[in-house]
Amino acid sequence: MSDTNASLAVRDLQVLWHPCTQMKDHESFAVVPIRSGRGVWLEDFEGRRYLDGISSWWVNLFGHANPYINAALAEQLETLEHVLLAGFTHEPAVRLAERLLRLAPDGLSRCFYADNGSSAVEVALKMSFHFWRNQGMSGKTRFVTLQNGYHGETLGALAVGDVALYRETYQPLLMSAFTAPSPDCYFREPGETCAAYSERRFRDLDALLARHADEVCAVIVEPLVQCAGGMRMYDPVYLTLLRDACDRYGVHLIADEIAVGFGRTGSMFACEQADITPDFLCLSKGLTGGYLPLAAVLTRDSVYAAFYDRYVTMKAFLHSHSYTGNPLGCRAALATLDLFERSDVLGRNRELAAHLAHRCERFAGHPHVAEVRQTGMILAIELIRDKARRQPFPWQERRGLTVHREALQRGVLLRPLGDVVYFMPPYVITPEEIDRMVEVAADAIERALAD
Image (cartoon, rainbow, N blue to C red):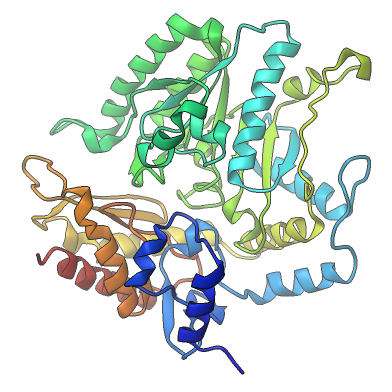
C-alpha cells in the first residue's frame, strides 16, 4: 500500500522527533510529507508543489535532484562509499581539499574535514585553544563572540553563540565567552551609514581585546550576515578592522561561513568583500550543494605546524568523526564546485539578487515593516508592531509562523526567523519563480498582520 500525505504524517508522529520544533504544534498543523524534488520545487504525495524559498535550511545551491550532482554520486557509489581517513586517504578528499584551498582567501593551506556546521565550529574552537597550549600560552582559554551571533547547537558552538532561544536552557553547561556588541546595522542612528555604524561598534570589540587579549584564543564571527539571529547584516569594514585587531592583539580570527559561503553574499566567500583571510574558515551547508552532510575547516600552515611533532610530545590534534572526509560527500562537493566553474554563477546571482530587490521594494513603506535588507542572495523583511517606536510584536503571537503556514497553503516554503521573513532560494530559481515567491509572501504577510 502506497503512502499518502495523511498516512505518512500519522506514521511520522508515532516515531519521529523533529528538529527545532515544538512537537505539540503538530496536533493542529500537520507535517508536510515530501515525495520528490526537482529544481526549486518540492512535491508531496498528492502532487502538490512547494517552491523552496529557503534552500531547505540554506543548503541547496543548484536545485533538488540536480542531474550533474546525481551523476557524480552514482559514479562514486560504484567505486568507494567510505573509508576511514585516519591512516588512509582517497582521491575525492584530496581533490576537494586542493580545490577549496585554491578558492579560499590567500594564506589558507590546510583542510580538516568534519560532518556538519556545528562540528566545524567545534573543530575550529578546539584547534585554536590547542594551538595556544602547544605554544606554551595556556592562559588563553576564552573566546570572543558577537551579540546575536549563532554558530550551532553542540555545546561548544552554543557557548560562542548569543541567541537566547537556543542557548538559555543550556547555560549551566556552557563555557564562558566574552560578548561584544554586534555591528548589526539595524540599530544604526537615522542618517548614519551602515559602514559608519559597523565601524563605531567595532571600537567596543577593540577595547575588549585590549583588556583581555592574554585570555583570548580567538574571535568568532559570521561574516556580513548573522543568519539565525534574524538575517541581521553589517558592513565589510568591520571585518577589515577585526582582522587588523586580531593581528595586533595576537588572537585568532574564526570566520563561520557555514551559511554565507559559496556565493550567498555575492562573492564566493563573504570574507572576500573585506579582502581578509581568517585563521580558520568554517564551511558546510552549501558545500555539497545540499546533498550530504560534510564540513571543512581551512587553516594556515602556521597553525598546522604547531601540532606537527613527535607523538610523545602529545601535540597531535586528536579529533575525529567516523565519517570524516566521506567519499560520497566529497564527490558531491566536487560536483558542486564544478557547477560554479561551468557557468558564471555569481554573475547570474547578481542579476537574480537585483530582481529580488526590485520585487521587494513594495515592502519598504509598509507600516509594519521595520526594514528590508539584502546581502547578495539573502533578503530579509523585518515585521514590527510599531514602526516609529521600533516596537516588535509580542513573540507569543508568532506572526512569522502564520506567514509560514499561509505561504505553504499557497505553495511556497518560507520559514521565518521569529518575525523576520527572509528569502534564500537556490541559485537555479528563475525571475518568474522569484515573482511568485514574493507575491505569495506578500499575501501571507498581510494575513499574518490582519489581526
